Figure 1 (cartoon, rainbow, N blue to C red):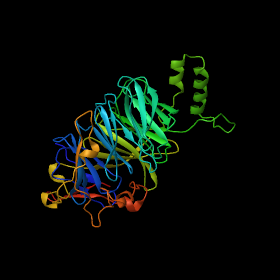
Figure 2: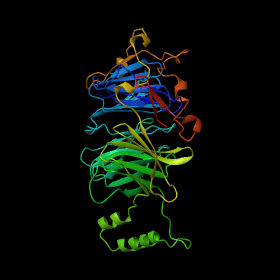
Figure 3: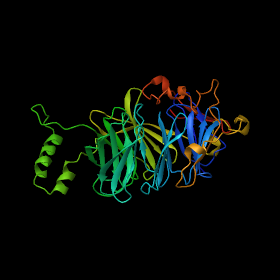
Figure 4: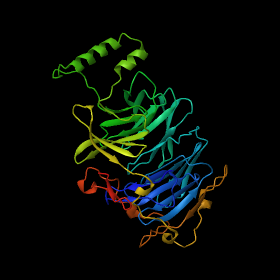
Length: 412
């Protein structure tokens, strides 16, 4: 059984809606009160909630199972196996439907979070590593020939100027410029075996890129252009070996030469136990660079990152995000908290002539003052922006109180 929970780094609270016990997709609009939920029992329907009030704002139904949902300040994007739906975030009108996209059974895609752009990246081919970058604001498409094998992971940086990708083999990670699609960096995760990349994530300043996989190692790569050698270059063993490899690579076949000149990890983390599905991200917390790794069994690991020398990262904190079914401290959602008015329909704005019609019901925003005419989500929900983890006032301790057992779980 899957239970959706929202942890707030601002208000020190945890919400666990009781009416959606089988959540398998949950996405939050930055640090606002709006969350998108998809349940196992209704995999074709997307619900948007005000999770603090426990009220539904609207819902949409799609022709097939929803595989992934992402949203930013301008767009809400829903991915099915062979189609992608792009909505305007404020009124949730359907702006564009990308039909007959290459088979994408994992629902892989990335959406930029930059305030002024909405780039969407998704696999452009089911058999080779082509990436389609779609400008969801200007409706312009670009194709990037990224890998030889199918794409398995994608991530934009915060400024939406870079896109990182990895293939199903998991050995090579590449970074491209956006929107041009030029290759900027190429990193080798390893040479011994193929792995499944679970996640890619840039640091807020785009100086680092982290990658986690189904192995025990999380890699952090440094995005820096190696300039020409100068007289002040330190005579370290690493620098000496770098010169030796560069000289030797000119005498080797192109394939071998490429392997030797690829940059290796700047820093690493070895997870215990290994094999858990996980996701990683880089952040500045309390003015220090940190690597955060969340695992499928509900643990959050926070590591200190040496931004100068790299190497093995040291574990700073380990947290248990949730316990058993009775560990919930969230507000219960009940029928009494839901608005009683009838649902107007948006089916006419989202009907698709080539497939089963997409349908929607909207209750509207229920907060005092309401939204502007024609808006489902009011402007002030977009004002806060992403949670600022480097702001100590926005990163207080978070505790989940278990009333039955009388124990407290400290999340930070």
